[in-house]
Length: 236
Image 1 (cartoon, one colour):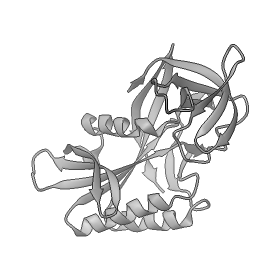
Image 2: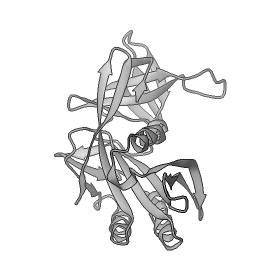
Image 3: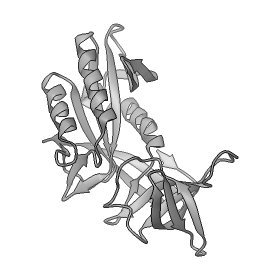
């Protein structure tokens, strides 16, 4: 994936969950939309470099920019969940992940139970073989350990419950964790932050739901952020 037409800025503060105040190179201050509900306290610190992109013209918006990424430990980290489904679809099409290599996308945003699951997949060779795939972005990596979530997620737990139910209705189910910091070596659910989600994740994994933590690399080339698949890592 290539995200184009980016500018750099410096983080000032986060007035609310979805808004960032930043400073451009000319020292002017602006607000940007942050499409990531996580706490991000280890990433969004004063004066940290940001990647931003000017938003499409929309008179209803209060912010003229979108936050795309943040710089941490000599790496650019994607901070915009709007690209998660596109990254996941590229990974599905690449056929490099064993658990989903036989599948292709049938539908995005598939309604199951009381939730919308990111993908309904179908087996390329077996018509009746369908899989639900939920996608989560993971930006918290400490000492090479990727952790999700970085804030309690009732919605995330509900998605796991729906995937477990789907198993009982002859669907296969998977959760893809997009780990957006390439120094990650293993993945664990963040029990300290959300023990309920942790318990549910291990339960669904025990009952046959595929847990797929996959690491991506990022590279900034002029005004483009290039994101590529790197490797699958283990759930511990």
